[in-house]
Length: 254
Length: 254
DNA sequence: TCTTGAAAGTGACGTAACGTCATTTTATAT
DNA sequence: ATATAAAATGACGTTACGTCACTTTCAAGA
Image (cartoon, rainbow over all chains, first blue to last red; front, side, top):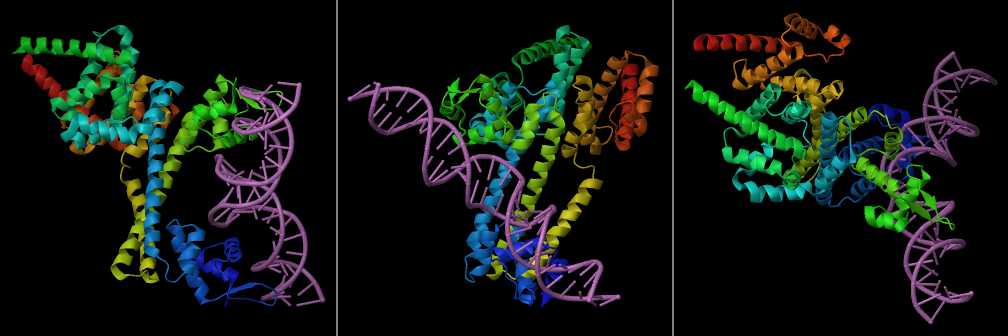
């Protein structure tokens, strides 16, 4: 029979917790001193460890009581439920993570958070999971999985998305100078390079990608970073210009 | 001015929630009828949507009040904190998931759960946690997560700084491929272009700039965000390589 | 205008798992 | 015997509302 303090030393739980467990009847002391101090034995220690373990699996005290109470309780289905629950919670958190990252990207790009973009974010983050899969299936069929990994998703924080955002910011900065400006053309070149790296020469995929980008709705459905129409059109024109120039140069050289 | 029921119809929140927000002062009605019924206007509806959005990011009502209250509140650091929090929670859940799966396996295998195995499981998962952290720290932390730590320095809203960060992130991503890799060389070209645009050919200034970047302390003093030594050295070497190659090409062409 | 049913109002308790006082009693070492 | 540490009890606080229970107001029909 050991004192409550010994228990806390050996197991790391607090005195308050022991009292709590006593109160809710989850773990009652083996005995008491004349003065009413709680005393615990080996059996209680073991049960306490069990409780702690179950807690680390995320079970509530109520469920734990059920499980440790009934000897022949159906542990397995409890575990299954718990697993499902955990997975659900994780999904929720993942969604949150995506949203937060999306907002952060937006913030980085525009320096502020405006509700219109946020509406978009909310809108498709709600329908995202569903629509995105559906969309990718009919749109890209075979390459679906590839694309899924490749697409610079709005919500991801990877270096590629970052650079897309950066490049678009650059475009916006230099837009006033027109599509022929050196700065603009350099950015375009970089964009094309990235495009190439991303799709590794798979032209169909690349075309599909830009097709999607041209349409706000499709973009949203695919979970891509929403680009303003104006910027997008500018990029297209500048790209055309870049490609014709490049053709000329190559033509001249050969 | 619309009634509380209209609000619930349009936004999906419950009446109780509206009352709650009123009570804690998060969202007070625009006015009341003679009888004391709450009335809301457009402004309140917008704020309510903001609140719902922030909630979907997992912020507490208290934090939301701070954020919607102060106009010039530092949103970005709030988002960052939130992201860290979310990631932590996700990690916890992942641990749980693994533990639960472990127990289920054990159960399937032996038809029971005994504490000895469980002890092992706990021990194991603790160790793994430790090792993972260690691993993440010494490994260059898989850029992804680090990027968002990096961004605040960038968040001056300056598109150029943003692109610098993006380019360095790209360098880190491709570093393992060596200085001669196409991807690396392209990035280097872009870096040199930006360098040129920035200093307009003033070589002294450019040199000074990179000198500063080489020193952690000076960097910070100058308000630049510090670049890791390894990355910096890599950039230098890759740049050398790029320049010699370019010289060769020019030599061959002329 | 009166009636009436729906809508809205105001408390107040419950939730999960303890943390954190404040106050009183018991155990233990000197 | 006394001082001090340890324990006990009780009660409030935390989060974001859900859920009664009971009263008052609103809007429309008779």
